[in-house]
Length: 173
Image (tube, rainbow, N blue to C red; front, side, top):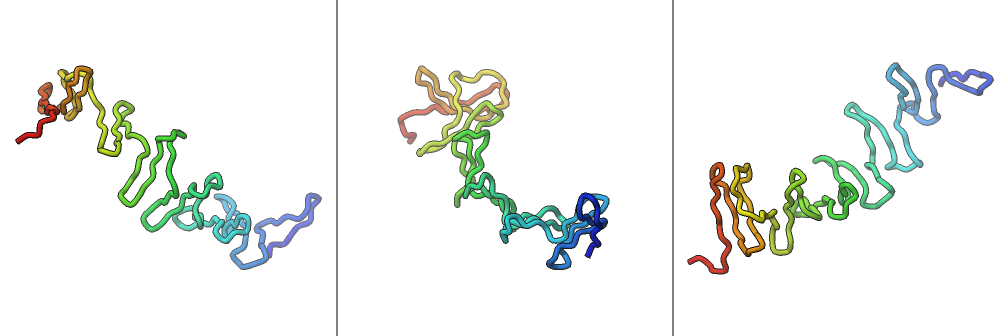
């Protein structure tokens, strides 16, 4: 056990502090910082322990944010596990969750802050163009819908060459 020294400021230890318990319950120091032998237990809770190993800091039961039931971050053998949704920029339609089928996005997916892809009960909703595209474009696929009732799927074959798939109420034979 470290030998305490009397001083006008109270008791202090020169090299280490031993805490009554086990031999690993020590506080020491080295050239890189303070070394806690057995980790830190918070609020005397079994799962509220912070320790470390050769790869980093270990939080036994994960991180609970804002004391909310679905706001925990833990880990398993496959990676990071987030309970509940991830809300981005505090927007109601900007949440990402998951279900048995895969990733679930609450609103639309916006690409390069320009075009959005979303869905409704009947299928995907693709971005549309109000005019027939005539310029060179890196776009290979577009949807046309305008105020005159023109509806078509546009496919860019080469450069400025577009092929149009017209939408009709007639089923092809």
